[in-house]
Image (cartoon, rainbow, N blue to C red; front, side, top):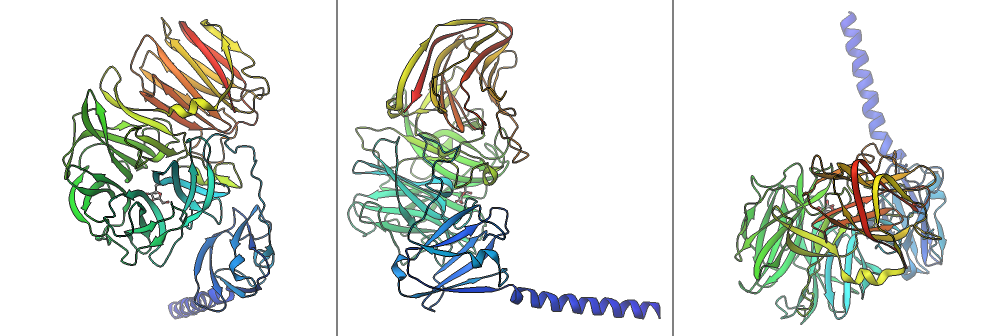
Length: 588
Ligand code: FRU
């Protein structure tokens, strides 16, 4: 008897929960209609609200845009815009899923001819690229054409967390200052627009026109596949190829981030593609049909996470060409989360073979340089391989304490092969153009440090954008280094440990650190023992990039001080060291 009652109760409760499951989605669908008379619809966003899906229909036609966003529940943290200028006089219907009919967010959507946001928020970098507003991750499609360096990037125009991947776009003539251009490539029925590259089709191999700019990217929908789009107006507008995808998904989930270059020797385009935890190379005569050539990566390098954003480039060392394969990996970086490893070897037009080196080798041992690749089509008379990375880490990128915009890129860096005294490395060092950013220069007398020496005022009216150059000579010091400090007892520490042979950065006391549990941890890099270390440190509000011995060792870190760090403290735990040729530059 008891059992029968229990079964009945179970049956009834299952029935009720089934009914309520059926009912919930309906009850939570909202719809709003707008007669458009302005340039923009402004949508209120609250970063802690759950993500919902909205579909935008213009004049009752099929939905043309599907957007995932955190529509505000009770208050707007900030606003995002839907550009509706072309629909003035017509009707726009927006359907919202998982949204109550009377939701505060829906009710507060407004029309406006202006879109305003706080561009100058505290941690906005001054000489690093950051998106005008919204979320940014990887640099994409970096290509040089007719005096302009193009920088496309993974971009969410509808919020400051990762979503709705578009290619944002900016150009620069000097790699220092950037002009924002309209979003270049938007999601379509094949999916969001993930990372990829761009080339200039000098010989019109694809038939889109001589010198067409061709973007090769991942369409990330139900599966990941590779697509192309072209521009014949210097990247201002792109047309998607009607034959997309050009490489369909072969049945693996992680299949992305195509980086393409023209390989003269084998007379074809070569694509490096991240395929789970390997890189697969493809070849093509026309950018449209691709043949699989080979695969690299099994049993070599770091495999702590998925491989992403490859780049295969030739560099000259001792008069000979060496090929470098750059591979980002997440997680599995040397200090947790995301990082970029590389391999040095040879490439014959089909196969990449790595030299025997102590892999994994990391482009940057800091925690904030990810998904970096190089510019294509740099003129021969320049010949540099110029690299730029995303200055964040998937461990915490979505939660860093900024509001209207999230994340910046590193400065542009030149890649070279160098010998660090133990083995070959790929050095990365700010491009020479960065020196033109220097304004006021002040020299500080050489110091010999026993215990500590404090320089209490680096710059008058320090706005948090500066550069320090110096040579540190360890002499007989064991652990020594320097710290940037402010009057709030916040500090960012750079430590040379000659006893263990490690260089490290410690940011646990650097200001706001507890927005994400994994942020505060420090970062270590192997340090080759030398008599002198040439140091160059670039600070831009919320980031520090340190280059040791012309980038033989590089570490990038972001940090969020609550006051500018205008004090420099040298310290040693035992013995003494000297700091020589110290120069402080204010950055324009
Ligand atoms: C790397 C990455 C890429 C992908 C993109 C998506 O940070 O995960 O592999 O294409 O971001 O935004």
